[in-house]
Amino acid sequence: MTFGLGVSAIGQGLLWATLGLGLFLTFRILDFPDMTVEGTFPMGAAACVAAINNGINPIWATLIAIGVGMLCGLATGLLYTKGRIPILLAGILVMTAAYSVNLRIMHGRSNLTLLDKPSLLKLPIFAHSPMYFDSVFLGFTVIVILTLVLIYFLQTDLGQAFIATGDNETMARSLGIKTDNMKIMGLMVSNGVIGLGGALVAQNDGYADVNMGIGVIVIALASIIIGEVAFGELTMNQRLVAVTLGSILYRFVLLVVLKLGFNTNDLKLFSSVVLALCMMVPVFRDMFNLKRVWKRGISTHD
Image 1 (tube, rainbow, N blue to C red):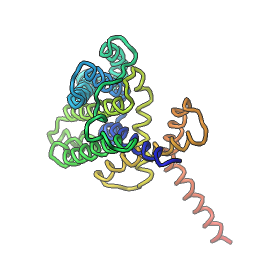
Image 2 (image 1 turned 90 degrees about the vertical axis):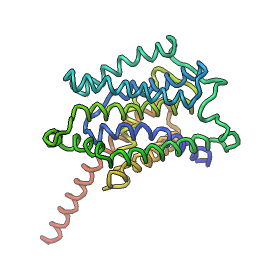
Image 3 (image 1 turned 90 degrees about the horizontal axis):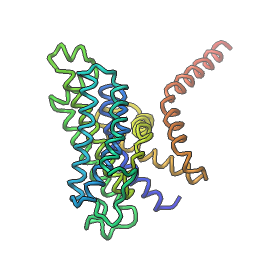
Image 4 (image 1 turned 30 degrees about the horizontal axis):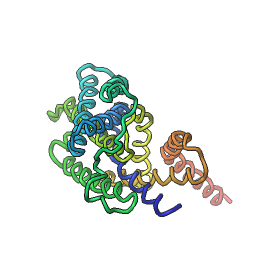
């Protein structure tokens, strides 16, 4: 494994870690899966690339991607809380609708490139950086800012009300917390971060594709689960950092898979297998402990 590939994996891991941080808010704090992300991610990418192609500054284009992501979260939140549609179905409905919206954003084309167009990775500060270091610098900067903002937010009264809603909705409601508003806010913030991730990945790859959201929820979950499995019991703030480290570890796992000679078409298969194995670690741990206790019992009997 060459040094350049290692740096590339770190850069990719940092950029994709935004997905893990976004999904963490709904999957771990609100305690429900949000399928909206598979529509929000390509929408953020499409909105950003389309804006840049229309002459908008890449920074503003990235902010637009965050905005459209928040709108997707708002749509899911309203369907879930006001329309009383189950969260899984609400996410799927918005994800499906996003496909058509993405095609309209990209003027009916399935993909849109950034060829000869500006992007955040082409800013003057990256002009003389070594290969792949631009994505590392950009990803690290964004992740540090995003993580600090989330840590601060979760420590505010509003953030604590948000956490309480996920921990025990009935208790939170009895304390006067408007839990429906908390859920809508969480979905908006989560999908805004996912939209940011789509914009960053699109600028790094140089294009937006209408199908680039397929399977991204597995990638986001892998970042969360691998970080938790690798680092064990953590505080809330530490878990946010672990998500980023989990995303980087996940990229190295995929890099090893490719270096072993497997086809790139099999990456989503390996992603699912890796995630499944990581989620089954507690089961394996329990089996190991039971086996150790059983052996100790035999030794004592003898």
